[in-house]
Structures are given as structure tokens and as C-alpha cells.
Length: 218
Image (tube, rainbow, N blue to C red; front, side, top):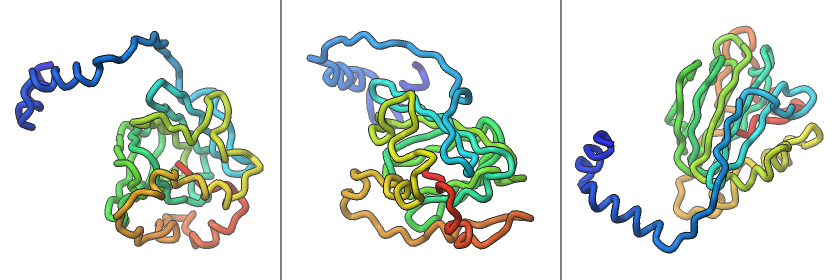
């Protein structure tokens, strides 16, 4: 609480005004009993495709979505990355490593390893390569600032993610309608072809994109 008070003061917001603002936002809203849930986001994931080695699952809260995602050992470097644009989210790496590229000019790049976290503003272009260090098994979890309605109901694969979905069908869903409709956004000056490859797994990304496996759409 003391930290929040100091942050508020630095931002020019008094504790009283922030409390009054919160009270005003809540005024008139009806109480709805909500369930407190506990789960392991690394277990009971659904496999996406028969070759991709990608598994995921999502859990919906009243106003947010939580996502668990795993890529099998030896397969992270062959899953074609796709540039995603959706609502604000953040997450952290539980096991393994990822190469993260983001921004309209691809200006943000970072290798994240177990314990590292990320936050992405709404509609910011981003793409990921899993198992960056040694093509190892990689697991991460993420949560969205708002409920990710594009993922559909929980307890099943998100809409568009299936063992039978084509790359084109999945690519069509990695940019939400809200981000497509956003005005005055700068052009995205990079593509998945610009994503690097390392070591013995180095290969043409264009060749990888032509493979009949589902691309990564996280």
C-alpha cells in the first residue's frame, strides 16, 4: 500500500483522488459472486497439430484469460513464427528459452529464459521462437489484460487452433479485428522471414514457412 501511495504521488495522483476514482467506477455496479480458482497451467494442455509439437490451454476469468503453452524438445526451431497483434498481455518463461521480437519496426528483441517475463501493449506486433538456446522443451504462461474472447470457451482448443487447421486459417486469427481496425498505426516493417535462426537448426525461414505445420500464433 505504501508503494502504491508513493507511485501515485510521483504521478501527481493523491491517494484520496485515486480512491475516489475507484469508488466512482464501482458505483452502481451489482455484486456478482465469482469463483476463486487454482490450477497448474503446465498440465492437461491440448495438442495443436500432429507435427508441430505445440500444446496449449486457456482459462477464462470474468475479465481476463490465462494461457499455458508448451513446445516439445527438438521442435521449437521448426515451428514457423507468425506476427501476432492482439490485446495487451504479459507472461513469463517457466522452462526453456524463447527469442522475442516486437514493435512495428521489430525494434524490441530479447532472449528470455526461465524466470524472465514480458509485457506487450495492445496491438503491438510480436513473434516468438521457442527453444532458442538449444532447441529444448520450452514452457511459458501468459495472461491478458482483458478477456480474450477470440480464444472461445475454455476446456477446448481456441477457435482456429486444431490438428486440421491450415497455416492460412490460423494466420488469419493472429490479428484481432480490434487491432485491424485501429487507426493511425504505423506500418509493420518486418515479417517472420526476418526472424533469425541459430546453430545446427539454422535454415531458411521461408523454407520453414512452407512446411505443412501449424505456425505459432501466440
